[in-house]
Image 1 (tube, one colour):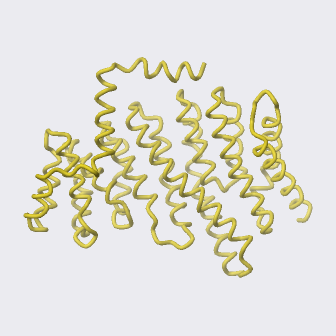
Image 2 (image 1 turned 90 degrees about the vertical axis):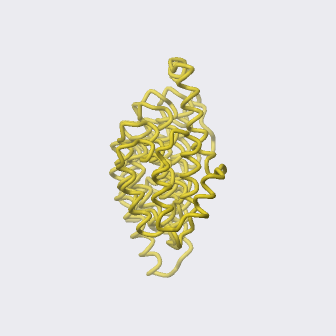
Image 3 (image 1 turned 120 degrees about the vertical axis):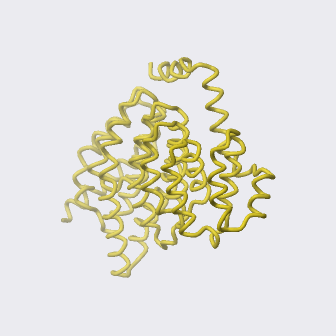
Length: 352
């Protein structure tokens, strides 16, 4: 039934509208590789103090490809020339009355990325509520590209904290009425989830591999901070799990798996995901659970099991029963990992 509803959604989209939206979405993704000769000449011949203003003004060009090319040109300006003044002009452009200027500014920030553009994130969050679908879509892409950028933190903890802070806006954008916005939000979440999952696992693994008390304390504090930052994501996860599209529900569950270090708080959502009518959603819930219980085993080996982990034992036992039901067709490694995590938590509880 769920799959039928999913495909019937696309069937209700008029062909002309679907073609238009797909064309714009594809163009916005390939624009970094297509820079027009006009834009290149403008960049080469115009003094620095003028070219930024001229390129931003050119976003209002009626030609969509030309608009995207100009955004790419501005995004390609090197860091030395991409000054604080340039960033401030782009932030102002995000509030321009012309939607093409707003979207162009968001596309520049999406391509530029990096620490140099992080101050624009609050402005981009506001653009997720824009009346124009292309502005919302461009803002979602920009948030994903900026936050996923390596910020130089050796442990990567700050990257995960930022991911948690901004994931809640992207999860909310998964429920947007326009599929192009949902697509961009999903793409951004995949970037954040991939990076966050790796960093959280590495932080937890560091607990097992380090005998330095100061290093262990710093890692523990980072993980605790991440857990606190995840809390605001959960209400939007609850909303997303009620969405009609399986892909939305699945990505919401993957977000929990990548940044959900507060085990007790996240387990009820994963229990719900395991019982979803759509198999792809159940599969994503199981993968998220696998990430979390693998980390629990690492924490147990490092003698770093938290109260939140121990309080999740009942939910993990419920998950174990769901996974072991042969009618649900889950994988053996998922079943075994949950069982090992429960054993580790029960042993840790006895030793306290």
